[in-house]
Amino acid sequence: MDGWSGDSSHQHSWVQRESEAGQRSPPKLRPAAVFASANRAAHLEASPLRRTHLGSHLRAGASAGRRKRRRRRLPALPPRLPGPPAATMSASAVFILDVKGKPLISRNYKGDVAMSEIENFMPLLMQREEEGALAPLLSHGRVHFLWIKHSNLYLVATTLKNANASLVYSFLYKTVEGEDQRGPKRVYYSNVFSEYFKELEEESIRDNFVIVYELLDELMDFGFPQTTDSKILQEYITQQGNKLETGKSRVPPTVTNAVSWRSEGIKYKKNEVFIDVIESVNLLVNANGSVLLSEIVGTIKLKVFLSGMPELRLGLNDRVLFELTGLSGSKNKSVELEDVKFHQCVRLSRFDNDRTISFIPPDGDFELMSYRLSTQVKPLIWIESVIEKFSHSRVEIMVKAKGQFKKQSVANGVEISVPVPSDADSPRFKTSVGSAKYVPEKNVVIWSIKSFPGGKEYLMRAHFGLPSVEKEEVEGRPPIGVKFEIPYFTVSGIQVRYMKIIEKSGYQALPWVRYITQSGDYQLRTS
Image (cartoon, rainbow, N blue to C red; front, side, top):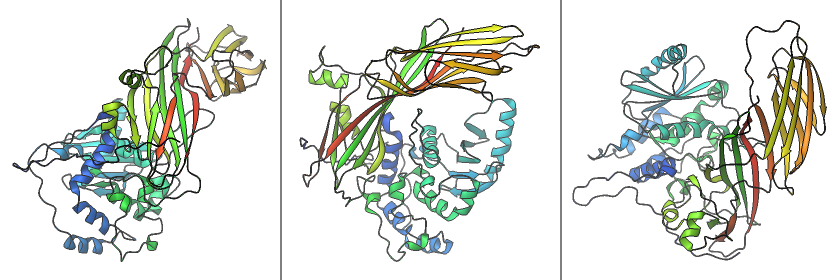
């Protein structure tokens, strides 16, 4: 692998001090990394007091007496200097409620909102639900409730000011939910709480309340999100609190390093990087065969097994990069990426200057970036259907599926969901390939094809009986849904041109690339 020597400086000046007035200028946040930059901004602004604060947090349990001693030992926080209201981005308190709205755990970060205000949340939520005006943001007087529901729990953040809602919601979702990629193979990334107990529900919160309190202390400070990386948190908050060496107040280096997402001293016998380029196709086709909506949502995920503190440089066939470097032309296929979002490890300033994706990666699995392409997509699997309904007798369905992608490619785990009348019975099927089954609770027939080569056509016929007395109401016809996954193929044509890895020890590392196209919201309406 070719070496690459780049600028290893990773220090971003988010908060600048004016020498004369002693004022703080507001941090300049890039929309692509609001969550990451807010973490860094709040952390750097609070340092070094924040580091002392974190050091004192290394304890086995949440002891009120130790908190009092810690408060006496720490110096008082300096008053906030006049200037732009940076605190408007923060949350005042965070609550975890059960399904009835009773608080299980709460954490007051700023003290400017009375904790009793949470009693107004559930009545307000039920009132809005009855009125059909339910919203993710509820207000009672001067207090605003930003909430999400997970399983049988409500996570609620309160604030008095005009908080940055996207930041608060990103924080709430980061703590409780993971990502589900659709397709035959489902890919998940874990959330913070699931690293400590498998399922996040009321019982697990009650059984692990000490751990939850410790996590809430470290996840947010004075209403600002801090370290939300579960791997870093596990270095100094363990599930068995008595294993901590409480006599030492050493802060884990990953908390105070410029590279807070990666620990030092990582070693592997074999150094490898696995790159997954995954694209989901969202498609809506009307009954006449015209494409109403089509877009591609892509993610690039990495699985990193590299020793030390390596620096990586990823090269894509980015159209803007090709234009800057003079590589644009008919021979060089390029892709114009939209709505690009990066992991916090990517140097945004460098990407803005020369479109170079340079970063020091976290260890293990993570999502490096996501992007979107609003382009006219040719349906990869085309569906033609004929539904004949004979009054008081039967309904017959004929579905033809055609693979409109390259012949050398194969779609795996294809599932075609065909809607049927809710009062249909006595199903009979005939398929040229695969198998069909009736799912009465969803009123659909699912035609499953394990392997679907490009350019092939297959047929499925279904016969259902109808009752002699029909329903009075007129039923709508839901669209046909399709699920699939095509490996070694991307719709947009995006390619990984190179991956350069450099580490001071000079070891050789192997990058591996895999391309996957899968269905997103893929629907075809019937006539």
